[in-house]
Amino acid sequence: MKHVYALALVCAALVAETGRADAPTSSPRPQHRDGDVVSRAAPLGVGGQVGEGMAPVVLAAVAGVVPRSPRPQVRPENLKRRSIVAAAGFRRMPPATGSRGALCGDPDIQGVRMSRIAGRIRGCGVEAPVQVTAIAGVALSTGATMDCTTAKALKTWVERGVKPVIGRLGGGVASLKVAAHYSCRARNNKRGARISEHGKGRAVDISSIVLKNGASLSVLKGWRDPAQAGMMKTMHRAACGPFGTVLGPNADRYHQDHFHFDTARYRSGSYCK
Image (cartoon, rainbow, N blue to C red):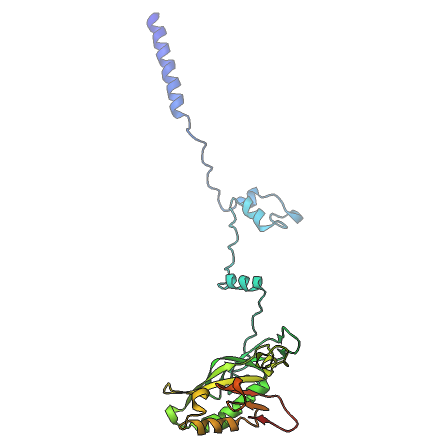
């Protein structure tokens, strides 16, 4: 009897152990649903049809598909620069229109059309300014801001007064060194004086002519140099007519190192000195 009772205990222990071994250690993984899961599981939409009136995301969720988050749009490369410009309160200058360099209706005047310039003091400013970088194939040392009337006068001077005088000397004219262009200031920077034509976009100052071989003919040295004086004075005279005012070293102490050209007009014609 004792042997039977002991055998029963051993059998009970084996059964219990077997039950623990067969117990799952984790929740069972759901079986894969086949392709008609929507038709079998989705609730009826508007009109009694499966999926009608239901948002795509809802349908995707019903079908057991996790919808992807929308891919973010590519940020512009210049977003940082544009935000800095906007924060600083700057305005982007409008690009040149038409063919390259076609400013003031003349393809020989190259540069960029600009926004209207509002003067910081009364009398200054330019309604329709342009930034000229080259005239009749001759580069300017810096982009010069002026109005179209002045740009056209400068072109006439380059074609009739500079190129013919220089000719093939040093390989010809390569560029003009700009000493001044638009600047909201009084004449000769004198306090209380009238607004300079520079402050209206009607003036440009040229200090030297640079040749293609690298040589530079400066107004300061050339005006009184026997080898260059004739050319300098001929170029100075050629500006009278296209420009209303032409000033050089003979005018005053303020113009010893450059030619001042502006398009102000006088009843007596051009003022050249």
